[in-house]
Image (cartoon, rainbow, N blue to C red):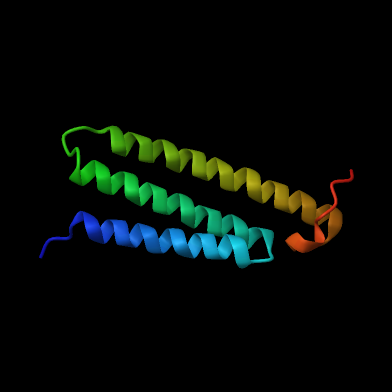
Length: 103
């Protein structure tokens, strides 16, 4: 049995859908960041799948995926640092309660 491109694209679509649902429906900033990570993982699965099935002789898809993983890790680090700073100042990480941009 061989897994084709369609299976990877279906997996990516499911991950992307779960990530969009989580980003829209969740109230906690940490849960929204995790949902955004699911979206970026779906993009990475797409890149690896197309690199494997469309251009298997070139390494560009793998290189882009590695770069996306590094950017994603930096995004999580900065995002969690911001959430921690907001929590220390306001004692909450719920997004509806963080609607003011005052200093």
